[in-house]
Amino acid sequence: MLFPDLANKIVREVRRLIKENIIIINIQGVIIASTDIERIGQFHEGALRCAKQKKTVIITKEDERRLHGVKAGMNLPLLFHEEVIGVIGITGEPENISQYGEILRKMTELLIHENYFLEQLELEHRSYEAFVFDWLQNTDWSPSFLDRAKTLGIDLYKKKQLILFSIDQNDTMLQRKIWQHVRNLLTKEHLFVRWGNDRFILFTAMSSKEQTYQFLKRLKQDCETLFSIPLYIGIGQSVTPSNMNLSYEQALQALSVSLATKKIVFNEDLRLEMCLQDISAETREQFLERTIKNLLSSPELMHTLRLFIDYNQSYKQTAEQLHIHINTLHYRLKKIEEYTGLDPKQFKDLNILYFSLLLLDNHTKKNDKTN
Image 1 (cartoon, rainbow, N blue to C red):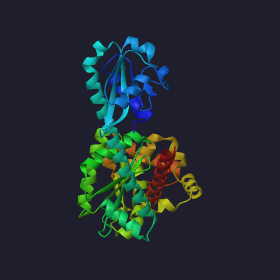
Image 2 (cartoon, rainbow, N blue to C red):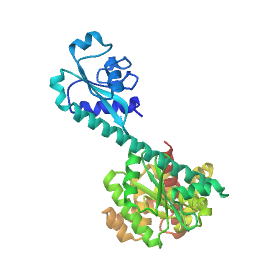
Image 3 (cartoon, rainbow, N blue to C red):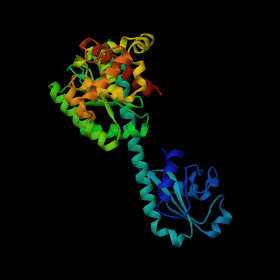
Image 4 (cartoon, helix red, strand yellow):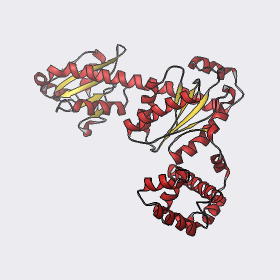
């Protein structure tokens, strides 16, 4: 219950409040954490007495000579569910430290209870994560699997869709904060679990695509504002629970597009993007070589091409967005044709250029996530 990691955390927290040296001792009388690292691992006879007697023990200067491993101060028992699980020791003259000894003991016990609660919460959530893993791996459900679903309160009869979230950072603490924040916004009907170190899975049964989109739009804006990182979202289609692995694959496909576009992506809206997943690295390299490779050295022309596509070949809107004259835009489009051999003013050639950008963005984002 009282492990060195927790004991060190307690010592750090308490040291912020007082300047005296602090030690944490286990019920065997061994110091497991201390502001004086040289004392860690030493036997403390006063603390052993404190643990056995289940009451505060005052250590005097005289006790330093006759008790093993002690210094003048106070030893206070730490209780959890009415049982002594350790001792906190405060070094100093008893008359100077007795005024806040009991307060520090109570604060330490609160930290222990909080840590226990978080550990139990973590175990509970890991059981959900393990269940989701098995759910997505197996389509043949055993009786024990169904029992687990019932115990966890997971409905395996109602149609649901799977939504994948991804963040740019492989940061466990950040992931935990985002997970906790999002979880607080959801109802009990939602199942929301961590998935690796940079992803989350949400199972939902919202009534319409528009409702799902509006909910995710607010969630994305909220998280990006609060945590200052982009949140990528891919949404699978609504399926029966026994086919949830299909919704997962669809969400993965949609997420790969979201990673490139930074938009909320529904799998059912994918068209040309669906082809990206099945293109080999060799084919991709050859395609880019034959299309926009020469254009990569000119960020200005790349940006112009992207905006020209985004604004549906509108010369006026593209020029306004770039803050350039339309004649300058015509010049840039001509340069793009010279670099690529493809005329962006021609529908067929523009489609090839658009697909090249999709391939490039998809490949670049995948490499970023891998690295």
